[in-house]
Image (spheres, rainbow, N blue to C red):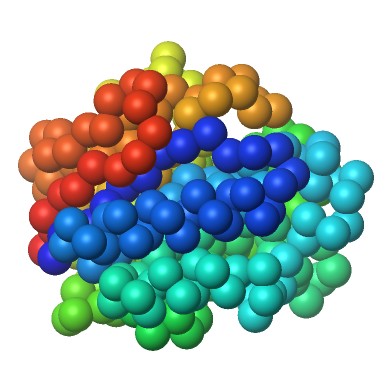
Length: 237
């Protein structure tokens, strides 16, 4: 399977603009053969926890009509997409939520980030269960940024028959995760690891790009580079 790992600079608090960007990247990646497109943490709003706390309209629902252009893009190119944003939970506060939209535009699963970092704990509700879905016979696991510091998530994914571990993150260029987390998770648990990351300024700093993938031996198999928006393709499975 061909998977696209994306990177771009989300517009802070502008869901409509970011949805337009997501839909365009899905269509472009799908046209090049991608069956799945992976985006960064909070790609729908930008990584702006304080802004999300202040503006209730930035919280989405699973069936939010503002995501219709993303659903339409998935259907147009028959590709699934992992999109992440603040999505309402039963507890009231939003989760940092990955919604996996299938090639037909329907919801395959949702995953709420389990390990919140810093100010996130003041704004968001932590998730309580692992994220899984299947596509074309492959089993996928979901994790979000700080989650990846906890190897038990990847260990459970491998034990549950997952071949691919999808990491939606917000990382600066000097973050040691590129060397000490993602390739280690891949090598230690025999997984393909696919990273969607950001570019541009955000509440945490400046996104460092380098979206891409690692093979089960821990070696890099795709790298989008540090500064160009777009996507890179990787073959997984």
